Image 1: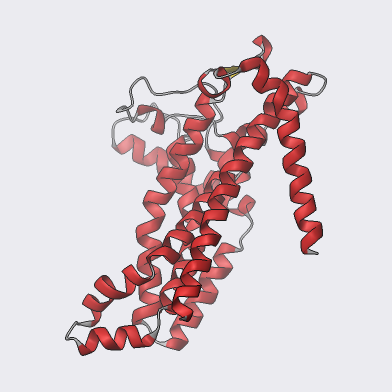
Image 2 (image 1 turned 60 degrees about the vertical axis):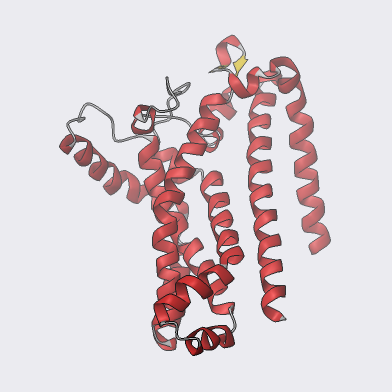
Length: 286
């Protein structure tokens, strides 16, 4: 089964890369820096790369503190029975289909974001924004990061905690100065796996992000595009454009190039995360 899985992945990678070559050869560097307009045969992914980076960054900024705090509570503070109950609940949340999160985002989160914009005096903005997508992704990746960070903290040997307490450290000090640094690589692995899910999520982001092409900030210090409609790689691939591209080899190749970019980013994040987890497990087993 492992061999079949590996061959399937390898075949997918080869197919995507081979299919991407015509678009990359035709567009060159403009594929990464230019704008997207399939009617003019312009296939630039800059705005989609920006949108994917923004929603993933917003999701991580919101999810990491809550997820790590949850992991600290379940691993270091609550009782064993309560830990198992909370862990099962968190893992069930991680297993909810993304379309359910997307529908909840459409039914509730959009209204909340619209109300927040209105209170800030920016009610002219649509609630379908990159920010809305990032907030929704934060809710989606929080269970993944929390449960994996809990595993990393729980893997730290009890003798480490006992040694810290023997040196006079309080429980809080031993958590902050001993346990968290010891489990740091495992927590980073959890964050990377959460990042991989955030970047690769399609349906939920597609429903709330607005799907507006070629939205880029005028300045690197401008936050306006974050509160505006945008496009991510996944929302582009999950929309109607793959159907529009049928019969146009260059357009199809450009979409395959987008898929290749997404695959490379997710594979890189997953590979680094698994390497960190393996190294952490080996160190704690010594």
